[in-house]
Each structure stands twice: as C-alpha cells, then as structure tokens.
Length: 88
Image 1 (cartoon, helix red, strand yellow):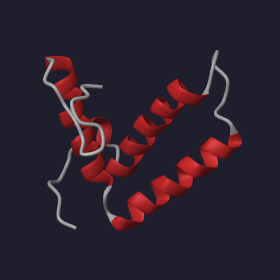
Image 2 (tube, rainbow, N blue to C red; image 1 turned 90 degrees about the horizontal axis):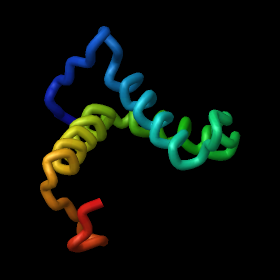
Image 3 (cartoon, helix red, strand yellow; image 1 turned 135 degrees about the vertical axis):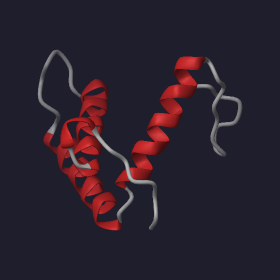
Image 4 (tube, rainbow, N blue to C red; image 1 turned 90 degrees about the vertical axis):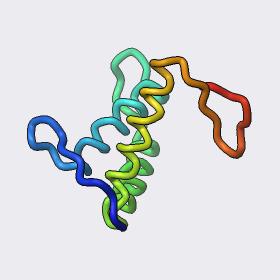
C-alpha cells in the first residue's frame, strides 16, 4: 500500500509509534491502578500489531488516529458506518 511518509519525533518508526499509542490506549481500557495489561490482552495486541506492520498499514492507523484526535479536540462531529450520529 502507498501511504504518505510520516516522520515521527525522535526518529521512532511508525510501527513503534503505533505500538506506543496502542499500549497506552489498552492500558486505559484494561489495566487499573498502574497494573500491567492482562496477558491475554497483551498477546492479542501483539498479534494485531504484527499483522498491521507486516501489511504496511501502520501509517494508515496513525493518520486516521491523528484525524480523529483533531476532530474530537475541535468539536467536529465524527461517525462511522456502524454508529451514525455518534461523536465519541
């Protein structure tokens, strides 16, 4: 796939940047009080990140995350096909 080249601060690869964001998000959802992620969640996340990296989609995921983050911060409504009229 052809996606725009992304430059990540600190010379981090797009795969590593996606991994950092994914683990941060998973930590907010599945870990509590500074605990580690449950092994099942961590293993599943690694499997998914490996597939995304092998297919070359890490940049796409980061681009979409950046667009959604901007929309949320600016109050722009966002939705998907499955959840119409939802802004979060």
